[in-house]
Length: 287
Ligand SMILES: Nc1ncnc2c1ncn2[C@@H]1O[C@H](COP(=O)(O)OP(=O)(O)O)[C@@H](O)[C@H]1O
Ligand SMILES: [Mg+2]
Image (cartoon, rainbow, N blue to C red; front, side):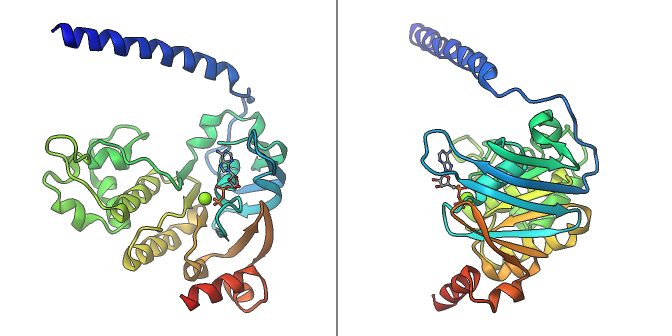
């Protein structure tokens, strides 16, 4: 009893630290405006966007302009550190541009309430969360509670996880944390599929997948890309990938280097050109 009491006291000191940190963070967050984004988004436009992480020498994104329309699939490719993930964070207002503007249907994200942007965004970040919760919550987390498993299974199906989920000891009710009693563990590729399922479940006007298939087998990857294509008409889709073959399904490919867009076009235009895309494609075939 004394040991646990001491542990609780000890931990409560950290809770106070956490609270003062959160208070401080709330004050430091740059103030944004009160504008909101409409339910249906037709266009996202970036206007000479520059972003530099604090304490770094060079901008991570350095003067990017682009326009994305509803129904379009955009692929972003480029070597590590070329600014792809940073661009995704700027488009979704996780980061605000130092210079230039990001406009959703002519509403500047700098003046917009972040929750109105994020509720219209589904983002699978490169480092997504593997929640130590049930399989169901790993699909529905952040969305209103539902007692209907239909849409959850639809998302599971869309990413080809039905068989794997059915094999779990308690299906959707299985805890996905091996360290907990009764928990099960998924493989890296299965987690990635589930993270994609979580994004698809949200059904938002903007879907961004940042290297979603890096640990998947070819079948899983193919399935995800077919699904993206199937639902593309309803939304704007951005896929960051190193699997250059998969960029065939994109309406447009952006090639990034050092925070800039150095090439853009359709697969056929870039693959038979003489730029970085053709070079990366040759390297991939050489392997
Ligand atoms: N949180 C961060 N703090 C400081 N620098 C960062 C941070 N995240 C990324 N960078 C830097 O920004 C540049 C672009 O990174 P990133 O957008 O993650 O590239 P990519 O996704 O194309 O690999 C890199 O030089 C990287 O080191
Ligand atoms: Mg990245």
